Amino acid sequence: MVSGSDSNRYKFTGKERDAESGLDNFIARYNASSLGRFMSPDPAGGSLADPQTLNKYAYVRNSPATLTDPTGLYACADDAEGAKEHCMSDNDKRFEASRQHDLQSKNGDVRRAATALGDPGKEVVDARGDKVTVQFSSAEGGDTHSVLDANGSTPISNSTVTINSSDKGTALDADVGHEGSHVADAQDVAASITYTNTSFHVGQDISQYASEQRAYRVTDFIYRSANEPYNGCGNASCALGAGSSPLGIQGRIDAILRAHPDIYHGPDGRPLTQQTPGGNVLNIVVPH
Image (cartoon, rainbow, N blue to C red; front, side, top):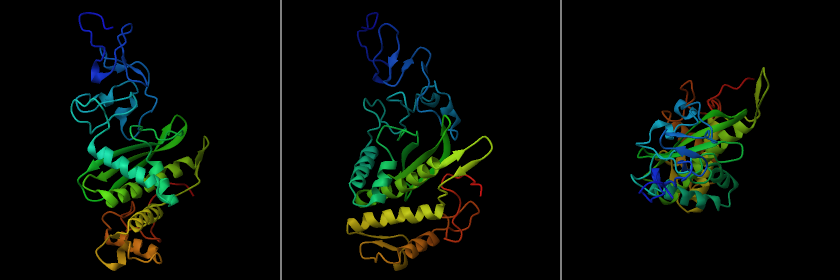
């Protein structure tokens, strides 16, 4: 029981306050509301791409007015104001429903993509410590940005996935599968990295081109399974899904990439092709 006249044990963001220590229980660790700091470091680590997260004792990047931390592990940016349950927006629920649908696919690459995204409410998605953050935008299409990070001395991938908030049904299933395929590629590259004090070696150097080819094959299978067509450029040269032949799919994916050079290009600005495959999916320079 909380001391004083206030009998409510549930305090900051609805977390239970320990009567003896005065600390709030965030499941993974305890927070001192008087200090605005956690009492133990963040077990999920931080991102080199986001220096605010490297402070392992701060509460949600020192932005409590706009972010919440339901378990002491990560921040949820799309919670409704005053929400008692976190990471439960309509977008979150639709995304997870599509991920669950993809997990039941007969296609191994579709299942691989859905698995790589991890479970809802868990920034760290596997034992290695790879991270995935899902966000939503009104912009057309989806996007995945992955960087090399570290969990202690273990190389990991840190991926931010943006999903079109307007997509539903098969389109959303395909968005989740397509972007999840990119995440899986980034995780595979990170897992293949070995290094010594003087050098490092990448066992799977997956290019942007190779990753797009695999991701669009996931898109093709999802649309084909739903008996719906998909077209990435408005003419037959870019047709995938129902009504298109499974033969020649590489060429039709190439046509989609050529139709959008503003999106599909390498670090040097050249369009992605088999001859100009772009950089590594983790944006690292691989020694050869």
